[in-house]
Length: 256
Image (cartoon, rainbow, N blue to C red):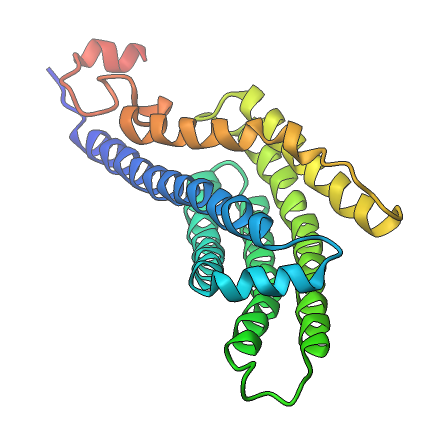
């Protein structure tokens, strides 16, 4: 009887590593999926009144703590994007190292642009905190608040174009990866196309009102589910008992 302990240890080690990074990426994406609706829909959309700077300023002044909490949530999301980029890079590097590295850096670039756009919201919070000490009139303060919020929205629109490009590349990697179903890769790429369409639509079409990404995000949600499944069940490559170091007859080893 012949044993294959070395291959077993290597297989177990590689599988454990994949589970760890799948868990890191999965938790990161899940945390973002919880924080983003709070910050965007729970706070910004309730406080910001389009085309009404006075009402927006009044709302933010009345909920300054909540507004700052939304900024903090967005900053956490930008940080988690870097963590997720790292985890996905490690997971997908065996599929195509060069593309995986490019896709990871594109997500980091998105996080950087988004974090820079957040400065505009912080400017609003700081401005309204010091309204009593500023020499600006109420009308000027309201105009500055509206301008900063518009700059944030514009910066986020540009950042989402970069994020869409990331998802298209990520979808291509997932489509080729052995640990992910091809349909998941296709859906993630479609989600990326949705972001790209919305971003370029906002840039190229006056008064663009479509939100295609609202209907194409399903791939992002399924990716979270599949990452947790990979973290729990392990890689498909190491399903066989022979690989994980169980005893194998010499005749079977030769035959294989």
